[in-house]
Image 1 (tube, rainbow, N blue to C red):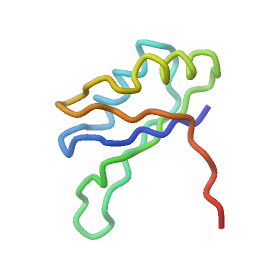
Image 2: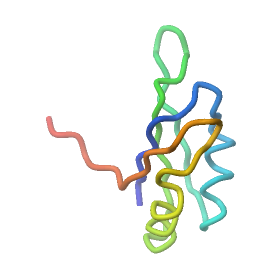
Image 3: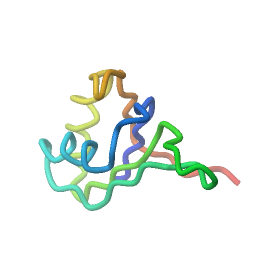
Image 4: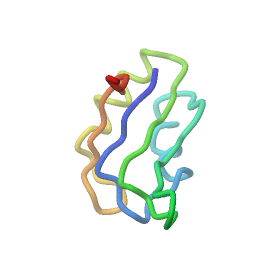
Length: 82
């Protein structure tokens, strides 16, 4: 399951995000999207969890919770419309 993570603090790292999600199960990948010129976080990222049940549990538990001083916006990722 691919999970969207929004409203991330500039200080949030991929390791911090991974640790938050690992409480609910196995995490395959964590990616925080960064500006290509400055390298600064763009404030959102994606977490991939192989087990859908664990992914749903993480979404339910972490949506609205604070991480690094900001309330997270967590939801199942949707494919981009071209």
